[in-house]
Length: 203
Image (cartoon, rainbow, N blue to C red; front, side, top):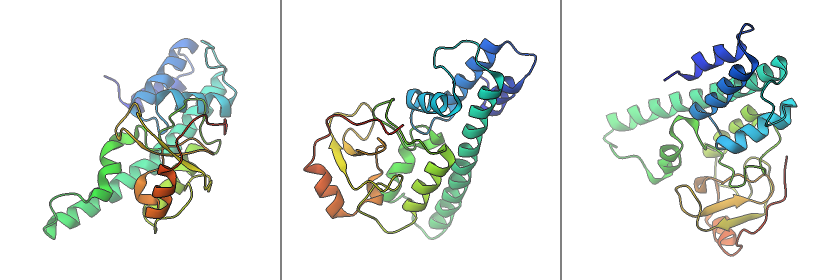
């Protein structure tokens, strides 16, 4: 099975068939898709002017989408490297079991669904790397009362999600599932009183 970098080379190959280059970009999302596969594809298409069903898009647009994805992946890999180093230090100190704070990282291993969007058509409009940077920064800061990505205070609780955790806070502004460790107990309690209905598109 081809890895992310191998697929990225296929996307950039000027001799490659455009349909294959597009397919390779879609396959990259099986290795790294911060919003989930469908939402990340929708985001890249919107930002780079690619028609989602176009089988032969402009190569420059494909490469622009790939570049954005690579920049976000670099942010994530740096975070994972720092996380691994912290866990090594904790193990040396006798903390063999990850804290509950690290449950979020366990569920997003590899970068898939780091900022999962419940509705594929509702996601942040900023570059992926910027969104991940904000999220990672929030995870290293004191908990807050608003979405760490868009600063929207309106957060609602979503029951019966398709992915673990099976329920959780969702931003009504940008659509991401907000990691619980970045929210104060009061913000989580407030979100639980608001059930998620329809999200307005943030894209």
